[in-house]
Length: 288
Image (cartoon, rainbow, N blue to C red; front, side, top):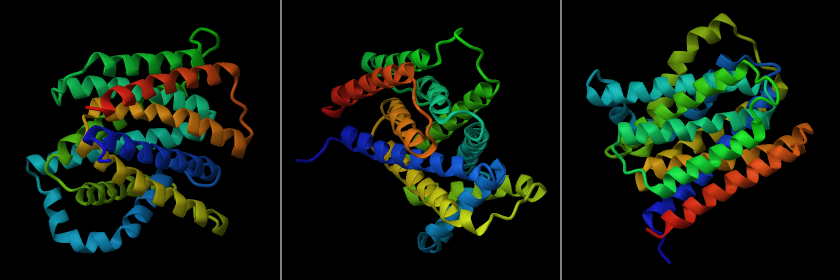
């Protein structure tokens, strides 16, 4: 049975979300020995190296993505938004409990939905609004605003969410004409350039024991962005971005298994609400 383009997009986004979740775990492990900007730098170098055969094949095409024209500016905007998003995210993951950090990061679909309506002129259906509203309600259940003071790092997470959302919207615009391979190659080159100076100013040579996790971080970053680019080619951003909510149960489970971070009852209830909203969106949109 041939899947609809929307369902294909949802499946690609699910794969992207799973890859991002794995990357978060690697980042958390590495945060004790490697500074955040250096993690961004190493992640991007590894990702570029993994796709080196592809880079060599498309190098001539890739050079055109750096021209100072409208397309080049869109690539640069996408890279800057993603750099802000990933750098702020790596800082937050090193400090906050993983489930809380991921929950706070679910302001991303809110930013994404607004940007997709304003910039992409996408029609935001009632089902799409409801998916985001239900998902955000789940986040509020987890955080319970007013129950306790929210760490200042929450603001860093919100900055990361806004950066990622702008990067996702730029990816959607690029995916209309640009192949996924060029989008990913361009991003990794830009991230290396943006992170090089802060990395050099605070370089710490990674111990040999960190090398496997550095490789995992780079590999999952590469697969996540490749899958994201494929997802954006097949469905509206306002459908794809709410699938980010799946990261919460995935990350919470990994945090419990790997770091003995036991999710509280409110985290479990909130995760159930988030999953329900996302699943309803997938069922409604998947048949279109």
